[in-house]
Amino acid sequence: MLVKKWEKLPERLQCDAVRPYYEKLRKKNFSLFWKRVFDIFVSSVMLILLSLLFIILAIAIKIDSRGPVFFRQVRVTQYGKTFRIFKFRTMVNNADKMGSQVTVGGDARITRVGKFIRKCRLDEVSQLIDVWRGAMSFVGTRPEVPKYVDRYTDEMLATLLLPAGVTSEASIKFKDEDELLKDAENVDDTYVNEVLPKKMEYNLQSVKRYGFWRDIGTMFRTVGAVLKR
Image (cartoon, rainbow, N blue to C red; front, side, top):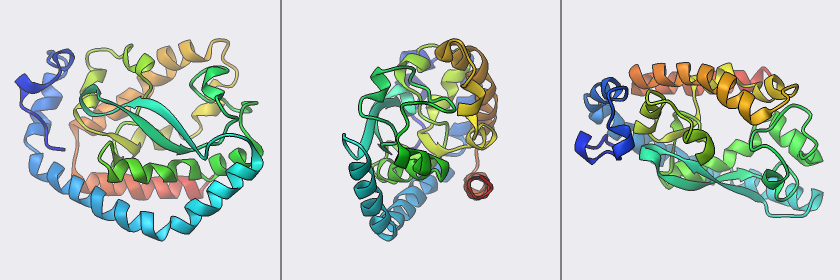
């Protein structure tokens, strides 16, 4: 998870807008090392403790609708690398081919069991697998699909200096994002032009002010936000 040398970054990230964020993170490599140690240890423990929950959710999803247990979609993480995220499936099979890649409030593609899983944020629990294997971290900018990353401004690219995260300050502030988009005429355009820039303000601040203990605080605030739903 240590930040690479500037000349080894992908060419797209070697721009003036990213440089200030890079310089701050390079001074925090020791903290980033412990961030990865924390991710491995905690995700390993939680995968063991939540194994029964994984089984219960898998059975409920299979009984409720046809299709796989997990929704595997290509997302973007550190340095622009792509990976296939693990999320418990909450929509009908192949839902991403039936409409926008952003979910809106009252989305007809969501299954009965999926509504409960999404309400409790249990679909995100399976991302413990992504944290354990290093594709994600517990805290970081939420991983977007490539077509949205392609529309990042140069400054937004600074969020790719760190691994994508299960949660973030932006995730807490925009926990009801699907409701914000439910009346949009064009969901993709509204998301990219209105919602994403606002989320990125929080994400960029988090990169600039990165700290191990700040991440821990974000995790606790996330739990509080979920319990308030």
